[in-house]
Length: 301
Image 1 (cartoon, one colour):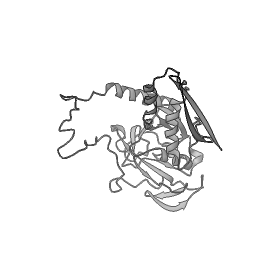
Image 2 (cartoon, rainbow, N blue to C red):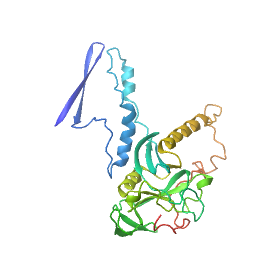
Image 3 (tube, rainbow, N blue to C red):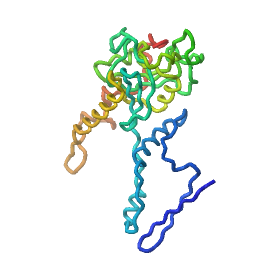
Image 4 (cartoon, rainbow, N blue to C red):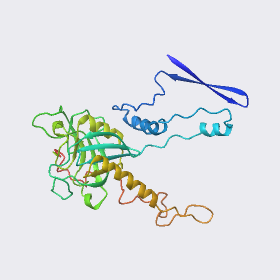
């Protein structure tokens, strides 16, 4: 059944009627329930509605100008949400952070050997990282991976005697000196059949998640998404993330303005014959290169 909603605007004594047709259920402002296949849309919807719909907009007054009405009607779409991940070693949780607010959190397992980035340490690296690769799109939940390839075997949760990587692989790259080996050490966020051990340190360096949870997170993130692994609580880690973003925004140098009002671009920023500025070596993103990365820990991590 469809419902008609009429909005009457009174301007200069002339009544204008605007009729909108909505399907039943449209217009709800409750946070969406994410599910496989529509999770990215759920995050975007949450980011648009969480901030803009918490306070109702007042009805236009009879004295509203036509210019104001036209400006409201021509407003552009909401900016894309900023999605980040924060992993707390203290809480053994991973949070999906949307525009600085925790959207959802999940239990995880970090390394049973503690935190660090040395070769052969089997420890979880700390600091700022980013997603360098996503492997396993559309693989069934519980799919077993060997050397980042789906084997065709599917394991149920808590399968006895088995501890492979399952369901999804989110490959991380370190952005700081203290985690620079993360990519070549094959540090992943991945599914595990050993779900009974989540919430405590149990891995060999990676961040383990339930299959259903890692599939959700996999669909929400992209290559280049920032991942912060912190030793403190989840709330403190998210707060530090917000404070760092504020500091960087306040201290970002203004763009150089050339005479005439145009942005000044140096030769070093854009080499001759190149229309795009070079990527920062610190924030280099792209699919992982199997020829470079070690595969020695892909069976269980």
